[in-house]
Picture 1 (cartoon, helix red, strand yellow):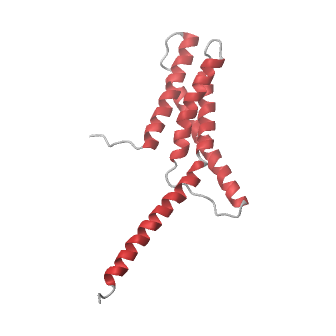
Picture 2: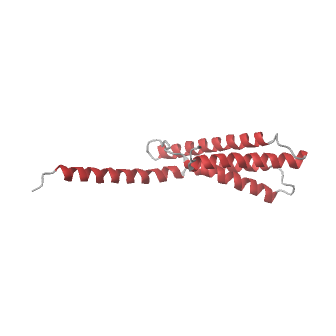
Length: 154
């Protein structure tokens, strides 16, 4: 019934869940069991991830134009969502490990999400040309087969 999620959608949903759990845990540490802090944790993590992805693509385009290359336009943008998820998990774990009372988990989730998305935006440039080369090779192979089929047999 439900469509199968791709890697970008899985990481997006998981990043939102990490932010929500960080919000609930942080709110529960301060006020007892609370669920109303889940939404702010999710939204702050999501906004930090989008800001980090934008920053990463901005820096990537800036570095490309400085080298005389055309600006890069992402094809699938999986890198920043995967980086944001991993960064949010590591940010929460970092805050848990370094805090004596486990406070500021949402800040850890936001910071990790921002940095993960920013650094995750860079590899997209390096992966995509490989796919383009594979597609070009397949197209050349197909045109070669068509040319051989069109030549008269002697």
